[in-house]
Each structure stands twice: as C-alpha cells, then as structure tokens.
Length: 62
Image 1: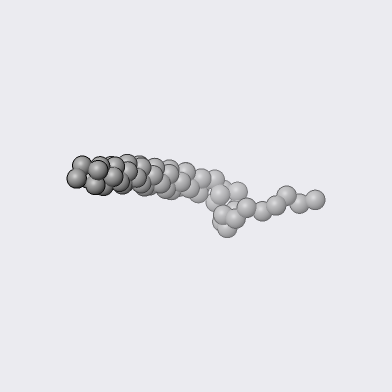
Image 2: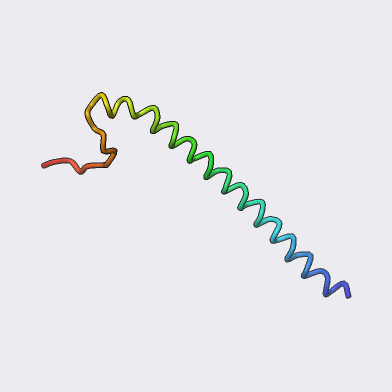
C-alpha cells in the first residue's frame, strides 16, 4: 500500500514546487510591468521635448 501512496505524494510535491515557481514568475512579471510603466512615465517628458510622440523605434538613416 505504501508503494501506491509514495508516487502520489511525490507527484503532489512536484505540483507544489511548480506552483511556487509559477507564482514567483507571476510576481516577477508584475514587477517588470510596473518598472516599464514607471520608465515610460519618466521618458514621456523627454519625448515631448524632442518632438517624438509616436514612441516607435526607427532605423537609422543612411
């Protein structure tokens, strides 16, 4: 009977590890999103100052 329970417990432990890693990845993604929003907010006055309102990346001419 313990041979039946052991693989089930190992599988559940693996799911718990994957769940914890998924939560960490989600938190990191949310932190990155906040950082990008903060950086865009800080760069917007510079874009307006130099007349670039599009926010698109343009290849160099030449």
